[in-house]
Length: 81
Image (cartoon, rainbow, N blue to C red):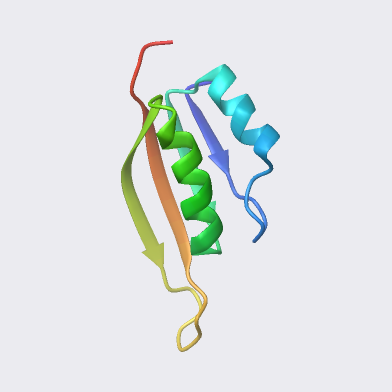
């Protein structure tokens, strides 16, 4: 696939999902997250392999005056398939 869209629950992606992404190597990954800590954990896993780099993170305040924030992270594949 050219693009994979992830929108996991607060616990983040299961490790098996991240490992599958590293096998199929989509050109781009868009990761929607409602918990910054699990987003950071999963991005660290994907980027630490050297196969992806983070190009942008865009937070969105859909719930004003609360501590909740949604974020969209955009990753691009670094190496050819």
